[in-house]
Image (spheres, one colour):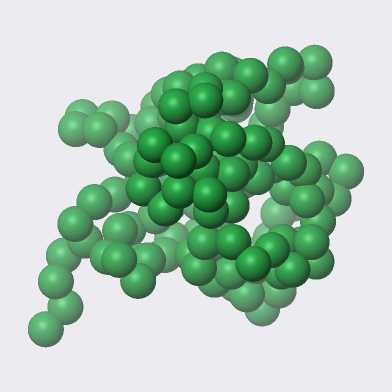
Length: 137
């Protein structure tokens, strides 16, 4: 029997010069020290786009423009994720909230593959991207 997801989340896929914006999670949040795309939980009454904007403000103090949903997945821990292509203006200063984010990096897909601390759901994203399940352009 399939149980309904325990939570719903949204993930920002931000690409610049063939590199994805990734965060290292702080020691104060779930999955501490793990690398992943920025994002988080959708609050009651929020649309996915509004949740994406809020989460990026909270985590990185930036204003992103949600472009479109790319893909949906269910994590091994039963969280339904909506992966959104988003735009971050190049002149935006990224200021990680230390309570949530330890570090920020721009990485290529190959560099993501090599990260030992990459969240499993992000590996699934790369597999779906390479399989042509969705396109970034």
